[in-house]
Image 1 (spheres, rainbow, N blue to C red):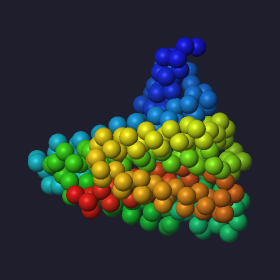
Image 2: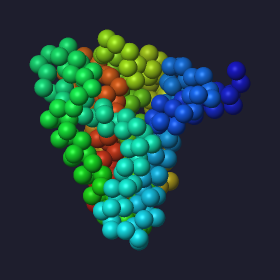
Image 3: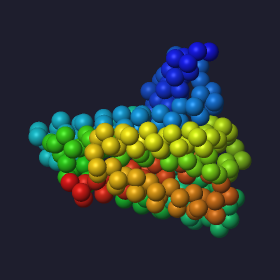
Length: 252
C-alpha cells in the first residue's frame, strides 16, 4: 500500500469515526485505519466547527443571533450524530454508580438520566450563548473551527495513556487497541496549528483548556472506571470544545 493510499484511508477513517458521512461505504476501513486517522481528528473537528460557525456567521445578519446560534449548533450535532454529546451524557450519568462496574454498566445504558440531561443542557447552553455572541461575524466560523479542532485531540491522548475499560466493544476501542503516543502528540500539534491559523495568538486559550481538561478527565476515568472508554473520549472532546469556545469568546 503506497503512502497516498494510506493518507486517503486515514482521512476517510477520521471522517467516518467523527461524523455520519458514509465514507466507510466506499472505503473498507478497520481499527488500524482509525488509529492512523486520529492525527487528522483535529482537521475533521475544525471542519465540523467551521460548519456550525459558518452558519452562525451567514445567518447572523438575517435572523436573531440566538436563532442563528441554535441552527449552527444543531447542524454540528446532526453531522456528528451527536456522538460526543452522547458520551458526555453517559459519563455524567455514571456518577450515579458506586463501583467501576456499575458506572460502566450505566454508561452502556441507552437511557439518559438526570445527570446526563443536565450535562447536555449546560453544554448546549454554553455553545449557543457563545456562538450567539459572535453571530454575523467571521469570528463565529474561526472560533468554532479552532475549538472544534483542538477538542478532537483529547481522544488520542487518552487512548495512548490509559487502558480500555469497557469489557464490550465500543467506539473508543479502535483507538485503544492501537495506542500511540507519537500519534497523540501529532494530533495535539495539528490541533494547535489549526487553532493558530484560525485565531492567531489567542490559540494559547485553547491549549490552556486542553492542558487542564484532558489530564483531569484522564485522572477521573482512571480512578472511577479503571481506564478510558469511547464515552470518556467524547465527553472530553465536548468539555475541551465548550471551554475553548467560552474562553475565546471572552477574549473577543
